[in-house]
Length: 429
Image (cartoon, rainbow, N blue to C red; front, side, top):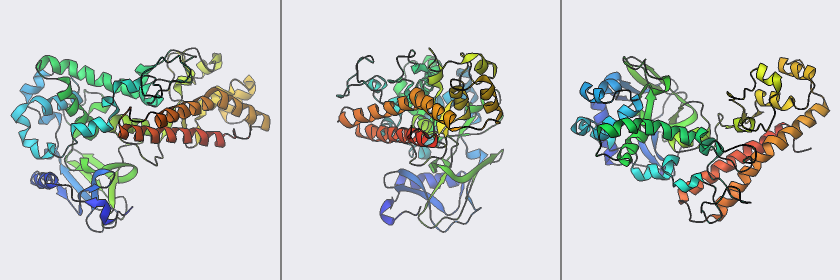
């Protein structure tokens, strides 16, 4: 979408200085540049008409900040740490060794910007059930609400009666676990430093890194093979966008289509849900074709839906290794339908359904819809309704920006659930 002149403003002198610095490092920039976009922060704008297939940015490997950019004596101190943790420690505590990256560091988000956008830095009480005054309350009371979506916070109101909360399974808890593991190592090396100092650079790496394999990274987990890539980190994310390709020579951004002057140019960070994008990067998309809601929690603990011997045998559900029950814009996934239909179909018909040879009749569709509604969808809808009611009443008890993004996310969740009800013909039951 082309932006109006009123929506675009210069990025500021530090970004001009960084762009000049990047070019001296060998970064090639063709017809694009950073700009401030009203309501969206920094982004990349077409400075002239761009044609499909043009090479917009090329970053040579020599300009990347990789594990091999870090001096050996500094790396030796950090035995058994992740690449993520090592890069963060280097940026935070290596002193004059990072002075070469000063122009780049000057363009990164401020601590305040992270505090407003990253759930890991939001007030701790948001992870607890809150009353209408925004105060923590007992989860067994009649109308508390968890304001973090279940995928992020790992907590539910509407299905607490069925199993113990699985807060440690939420995206936020997993992110914190990774950071604390890195900090445990770093804090022993730099005992006078603080977690707050380290957290900032850990989040810089988390939100601005790219996948890249260089010698010395193959022993690390696939998701930990990361680098920082100057200038390419200006590109904002969309569920579609320009191609970002890499090889041993470096990174290249190639236009996916023609762009008019003043149009924002974006890339895709991957096929991520909005819950993941919020937790890991601090934003959500208004339209995200990859958005989905996890339904795994409805198949755990004191089983909301009994697995039965066939589900375990067919690997659709294992009491100790359940995963990947989801709902997206096309409705609930096939695995979920298999689990639901096990409750209302004969074994013979259920096996045919799994094999794709069963033709639904009206009775089967109706009963499947009832099961979906009563056991999953109505509970998810109620969860969203209660969270939205609390967000509306909570006033200034939480920061305005946090309230706004949580309200948008819960509305998206409710819309996905209601769309699934329509897809599975539940509204007419």
